[in-house]
Length: 100
Image (cartoon, rainbow, N blue to C red; front, side):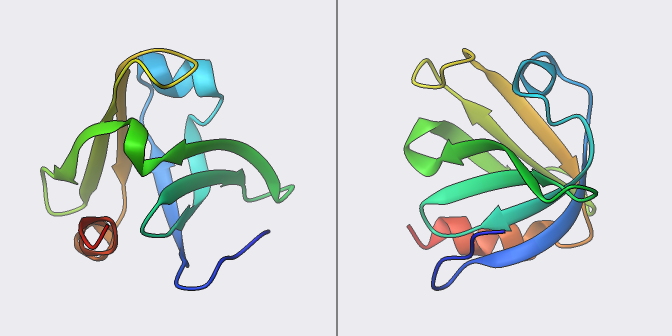
């Protein structure tokens, strides 16, 4: 697990969306969040699964109390789409990325 200054770790459940499947991040994941990057790791193996630089994101936010989402544009190598995460830390994640 590679942590950068100012990054935080969250446990999330990534919903089954087309982009999440292409990126191999469906299910329970460890999310590492900094102002410039969201990374997903497999919590069982601590293997990095996928990085999403914030510059790929069109929009992000908190739709429901325990939900955080972001939409990636064409810069993502796996194409456009949404990543939806269930987490009690949605508000905190949104604040961290909003500081970019």
